[in-house]
Length: 355
Image (cartoon, rainbow, N blue to C red; front, top):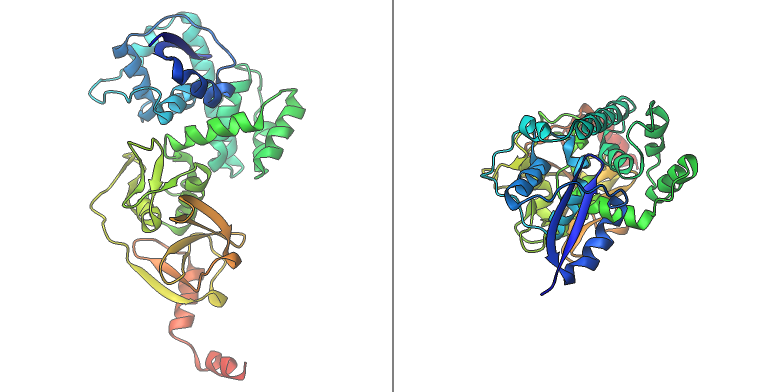
């Protein structure tokens, strides 16, 4: 089989490796938005390439994940082999191997990425940080934006197609919505979004809703006995119906791994949908499967019928009751409602009888 050289580059560095002809179209289609700025310097041998790939999961260099987003895309597609976890990555050694110009570019990009994160945290849009960073790293020159306030505010628009259109119009760009979203979903699927958690030190209903939204946006598939891990054969993250909830209980953000000791989902069915508080992160139940209420009258659940994690209006499903899950903290509005239902006062009972 004839070999081709696939060149993947980001502004901070460049990479070469050989792949078969039949992979070229798939790679080009999935990574088109991220391959616009080519600046090839050196060819990396396998050992060095694995060190670069290890950056994707490195807690020591978190922001570098976005700098090497094209590699994450190809890794999630199965187009390149997974890194050897026995390889030790030294950030200082990696940086010292760059030319002074590359080091300056890397430092500038890291500073830009942190500035985007800080700005979006300040305005309550932490879940959109990866998207904002990825668009910036892919389509803007380093240092092009000095004050990220206006850029960050654009991400308050939850309609991604309108968002891309607004960015194109304001900054004079020509970002393809379809190309970017294809790459974005693959990048998101290759990792667990660390920015989605409001309180990574506890298990709470707000973060469980964020977990569900992230699974939906990241295109998780349905697979029995999965909890959000990357499926080795399918090359994307999967969960079954219970596993979507169990995955949040199992996931340890500080370790970026799943705790396999938690093996049972315990739930408390509280009442009918007419009594449910409007709090994102509450569980829904239809007698056989669970969903996670995410606000705005919508529920997210892993569907065997659809083969993936789906979002739909609560009114369009067969949900009959709401529930809480053991191990999840709920706000006082939920606790008060549970007490009200389980311990009705004489006044409330009289009112219900009158109705």
